[in-house]
Length: 342
Image (tube, rainbow, N blue to C red; front, side):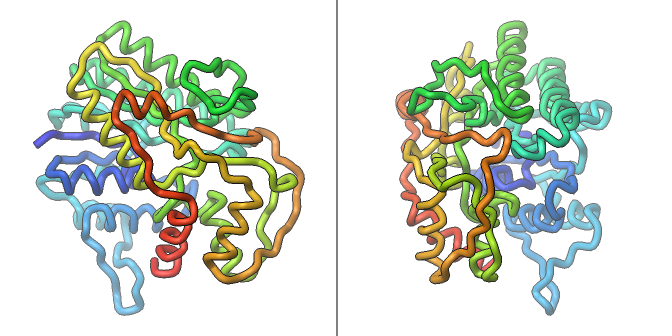
C-alpha cells in the first residue's frame, strides 16, 4: 500500500482521483479547505461519493451539518480528510509530520480565468505561495515524487496548433494563467535543487460528472433544462479541447506510475483529447442530448478568454501511454445523465 497526499481532493478532478486511488488499494490523505468558490455542499457530496459513504435523509439531502461531522464519517485506516488551507504552513506541516507520504499530487488552486482578473492577489497567494508551501514540506520531509496540476491556459492565444509542450508560454493573458506558469517554473527549481521528481500536467477543459457548476457545460446544461438564458460569449467560433474526466484520471494515474518507476524526472505533459469543439457545436450537442433549445444571451468576448485550446498529446502518448477514448458526444451523454440523476 502506498500513501498519496492529494490537495484539492474534494474538488471535481480531485475527488475522482481519490476514488480511483482508494479502489486501487492505496491510502489517501485529502487536503481541502472547502472554500466558498462554490457551494461547499457540492464538495461534501464529492467526498462522500469518492469514499463510498453516501448518507442521505428521507428527503434525499446529504446528512452532514458540519465539516467535522464529515471528517468523522469518512476518516478510516486508508483515508484521512484534512480540512485546511494550503496557505496555512503551520497546520500543513503537522500533516506532513504525522504521515509517511510516498507521492504528493497537488491539485488545489484558485481556479478560473475571469475570477482571477477580479482577485489577482488572492490567486497569487493560493496558487503560488500555496504551491511553494507544499514544495517546502516535500523537501523538508524528503518526499521525492510530486505531480502538479497546470493548465492549458498557460498557452494564451498561441497561434500555432496543436499546442505543444515545446511552445513558448511567456505570454499569459490572465492572472490565473500566469500563476500556473509560475508554478511550473518553481517546480523546476525545486527539482533542480533537491532532486524532487516532478510532472506538471497541463489539463485541457475537463468535463464530466461532478464538474464545477461555474464551468460552461455544467452551467449551460442547467440553464437549458430550466429554459433559462445562457451567456454566449462572442460569435460561437471559439474552440476548446474538451477532455472527459475518465481520460484525465487515466492520464494522472499513468503519470504517477511513470514517476514512481523513474528518477531524475522533470516533465511537462499535456492531457487533452486533441480535438477541438466550437462553442456553437458544444451548445448544439447539449441541445440534442437534453431535447430542448438553448436560449442564448449573446455577449462580447471576455478579457482573459483564449480563442481556442488544442492539445498536442504525442508526448503523453509516448511517455506515459496516455490514450483518451471518450468522444465528445459520448461524454456529453454521460454528463447529462449524471446531472439529471445527481
